[in-house]
Image 1 (cartoon, rainbow, N blue to C red):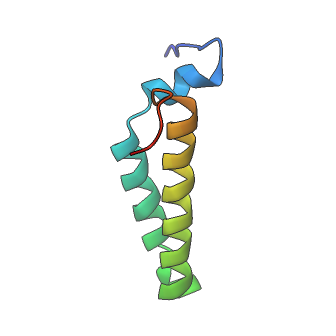
Image 2 (image 1 turned 90 degrees about the vertical axis):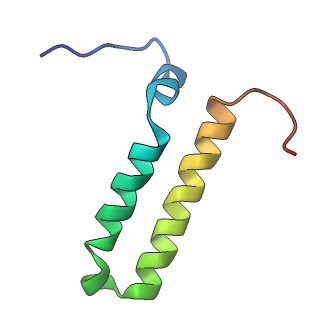
Length: 67
């Protein structure tokens, strides 16, 4: 097995598939719904997705003003 290394964190963010990561995060949180309850799970999913998209926007997206 070999893994590519990036010189900085931006390289990892640019190579990541945002849809796959968000799908994984949603499924992981949904599997915990019986333990934590629906409301806490929904809040956790929302927070994780917002953090993911915010990080992508600040690290990878073109530096332009949001429209």
